[in-house]
Amino acid sequence: TNLAVQTTEGETLAFKGKIFPSYFHSASGGVTTTISYVWPKKQNFPVLESVKDEYSANSPHQNWSTSLSPWQITEALNKKGIRIGELKSVQVVKRDPTGRVAAIRIEGSRETKILEGNDFRLILGWKNLKSTLFTLSAGDGTYVFKGHGFGHGVGLSQWGAKAMAEKGFTYKQILKFYFPKAELK
Image (cartoon, rainbow, N blue to C red; front, side):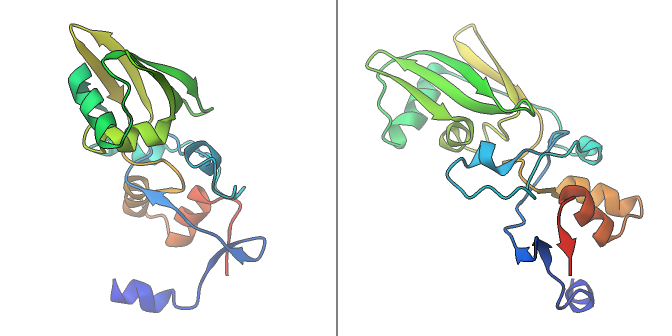
């Protein structure tokens, strides 16, 4: 790591001459997403757009599944101050162009809430929902989430970058792949 730091000293990744937040995540699940879909209130950086990412395919997080009871979901919501009462249903109501959950509807006996997909993922915990790239089904008293990838999905995929490096891609090529509109100066 010291050699990598010394070799790249003074280099910056920029978009239109300005340094930008070069986000990264563990594994994309096959496609990265645009920042505005994950964090709508953050400034939109056109450099942080979606790329199809075949390099993350061998991640141990490529495919995952978790089952949660209505009680587990309600408890997680309660801990964050979202008191909907008894959980009646959970439904995906909006997806971003990459297929990630952008909005989810939580219906309870007291009230119904629409949550942003990433907020819902963080409320349930990253151990339960590794990403928002999931499908949801209900049955037998549980909600089953089947998904792909690990993390928010914006920017560079660490597992994808690792696979690219193992195939002989340089750091410059890896950065160009995940941030195609950026310039390395």
